[in-house]
Image 1 (cartoon, rainbow, N blue to C red):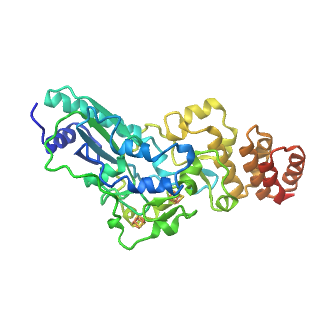
Image 2: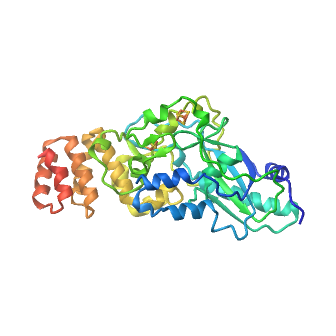
Image 3: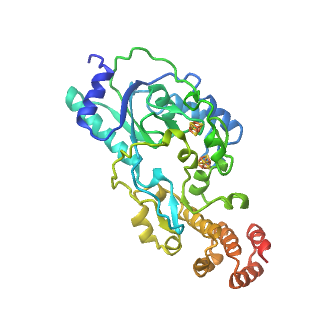
Length: 376
Ligand code: SF4
Ligand code: SF4
């Protein structure tokens, strides 16, 4: 089959699929120097061991090893998730980061699958393809940087003039032979859209943005919110009322001012702006599954989210939550017991102190005893 021009692909997608904010097609590009920053971060210990992410895996992804036998071109697409919905003023609604209000990754992947079907039908060819979004087996962000749709900000998040950084990206690898003008290697980030700005570096509550484009993931509230790990007390003092995620480095970015709230309020994996923190403590397995099963929160360990709610209640010092928190002092998981002890201590009541003293007598795990000690 004759090679297809990229503009024809874009036109077919544009006239068949609604709601994709930006789309283009790029070649399966040689690695170049783009993986360097990721590899440096691994070597500096900024990538948690639990990711099992190595230099070899990075190069594997940047060389498209899973797909290179057949993939010839990549359709890259982005959709805005910026709507006019607002966070409730009520502090007891545990905050969910904006990009998780819905499952925008799944929403975009489904659109890309439809786009490839429309292409096949219009061109009269059978297309082999794989649609992805939020996937580590591809150098997603580097591809977008290459495509020109978006550039890297110093917070390591992609920026686009129309959508700011409130957008998600997705790709469809295809075996379509496309007539590209030139095929350059992937480029490393240059952060040029940011100029002298450093707002995100200053706004990050934990100093996780070590320097332009370099994130110490272990310090990042997004990572901490996703995992059942014991964060330092100094971080808990900055936790706020988070239930899932953090987007402070995005929210302060000047690229995200005065944006058009263009995103559809779709229902794919919808959970909304937050969930009541007490409800989280009381929620049974069935209700949890109903609420989160199609959303990114649902793929996390329930105890990781529970610890976020407990930390928020401790941060808020919300006295009425004490009666619900007390039972978590006996939780089978030592990390949950540790956070609960801290939260009860912060709430600072006579009943709470009595229960901490009694727990301290029975507690055999040193890390939990250490959490209780300041409040005895
Ligand atoms: S998501 Fe939050 S904690 Fe992570 S780098 Fe951004 S501001 Fe810092
Ligand atoms: S806040 Fe400033 S430095 Fe950070 S990504 Fe936005 S423009 Fe760049």
